[in-house]
Image (tube, rainbow, N blue to C red; front, side):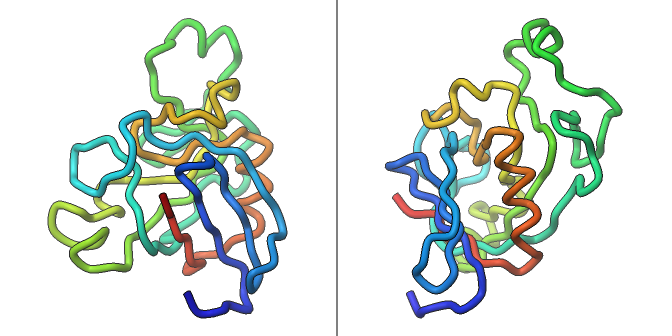
Length: 164
């Protein structure tokens, strides 16, 4: 990859780690949780897509930590441990959403491999204890404090490279 002078993100599926970089200098490192089903780009696969992406949009800038989102809209709920325990199978999307868009046609953009149309996000989770282990349904989950911190450091158009 060419050297970049602006911040960019690298997600390592093997290491369950997200790095925020400038050039090749690592500015921040966060544990993440990617798909329990591994890497893959196909629609409906529930796998985490690989390759080059960019931040399509950022959602939830003013939301309180642990705010609940459905269909990219805040529900008005705050996810408490009691609420999460009452719905353990729910795929909680909390705090912030960084919506990704694939930029490699045929790999993660267009047709049945379109990251944006798969609604692949980097987002907060209720299951913070599983961060660092592959447990998601395709998205990249982060601890709520970490997603809020990352959210403030990226902009639409920021490169996100997801590698195995």
